[in-house]
Amino acid sequence: MNHQDLIFDPQVIRRFDVNGPRYTSYPTADRFVEAFGADDYIRWLGKRTIGGISRPLSLYVHIPFCNTICYYCACNKIITKDHGRSAKYIKYLGKEIAMQAAALDGSREVVQLHWGGGTPTFLADDEMRRLMDLIRQDFKLLPDGEYSIEVDPRKVNRDTVRLLGDLGFNRMSVGVQDFAPDVQVAVNRVQTLDETRLVIDSAREFGFKSVSVDLIYGLPKQNVISFNQTLDEIIKLGPDRLSIYNYAHLPALAKPQRRILESDLPSPDARLQILQLAIRRLTEAGYVFIGMDHFARPDDELAVAQRQGRLHRNFQGYSTHAEADLMAFGVSAIGKVGPSYCQNVRTLDEYYDRLDQGTLPVLRGIELTADDLLRRSIIQALMCHFELSIESIEIAHLIDFKSYFADELADLRGFEKGGLMTIDDQWISIMPQGRLLVRGIAMAFDRYLRSDRASARYSKVI
Image (cartoon, rainbow, N blue to C red; front, top):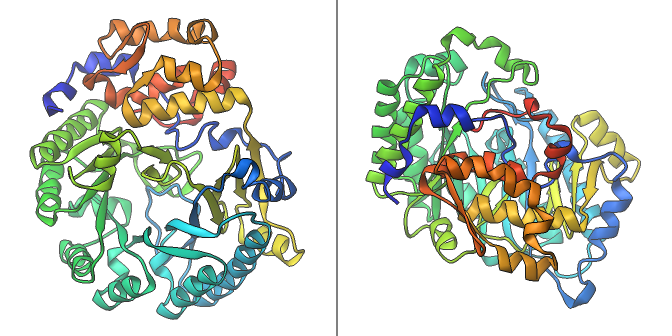
């Protein structure tokens, strides 16, 4: 796809750039209910082989600790330098892992593992070894699996990367955000190019299959000229994948963001220019625009999966493992097993207390209805492939699409008139110029949003 297809009238952007979810799940996590608890989750863990099907497993582990606070961050994190706290946390993670595994029906073979945070590399070397041992006690990590970890280059050296490779990790996600010094100071994340290069070079030295880099646009003090310089350096580093996230300034929800001055934030037009610049530079450098905020080299598994119609979206973003059940461990972690989602409690005290009582630390969740499953498949198709076969949905879900979604199709006519998508008897197709606004298009199929229209809790689409 030519990047020029994505450079379009700012007036069209302003018209369609609404607040909306990122759709890493449907229903979105804010729709989970506390009526769904540990017993419900255990029931679904025990029903994985009903019908003779046993899906492969994906595991997510949340490590909430960080040495320092990044002002832009809205993740569930704990700022500390005390490794006594992380040692205790790993002990309790071991309890949770064992309890979930004991309730699990079917294969324990794992095709995907991700450590997120927080900062997983906050853990000392022995702590990382211990945690991986605890996982391997109850699960079998398959030799050709995808095992990734989020890395803060400020706290990692070549020996740490070697250890990560020895532990079985073969992918890493490196946080950068922006290399401009004044932007780094404004968000309290000062990180040199040399530190970043060392980690990426070490990953290649020790056989990592893929290195991903995270950038953010819309940060304080950011402008087109400085971000272009950041892109120069990123392109030289040559990561396999890139994510360029839209900074969501929601200080009422994320307290650290109160230290960011709104007057320092780039204007909406400047943000759009930065995003357009990034798309142009990266596509010219040979990256495929996967969608929304992700780029990958043409031979990367994400790009291949998209071409083959296998791309999926989950809580870590775009993924190649659509069919896997996702088991999640740690505070605030979200899992997906069968037609259910669940999320753990958010604080360490609650987490430890539940496990001390011999109860899984599930805070809330949801059991998907037939309507939820139908709408999830539509939103997944739009977010991952930018087109939807109406016939395939009708066959899979036994509905008449046009009558079932009459109101939704009427709502989408505005996008169609704006040249962002086409709708005919067989296909719904998002045009290249509509890809940046795919979240807004997907929202038309969100039954929960249709009923309450409470979109203010979400960030802007662009």
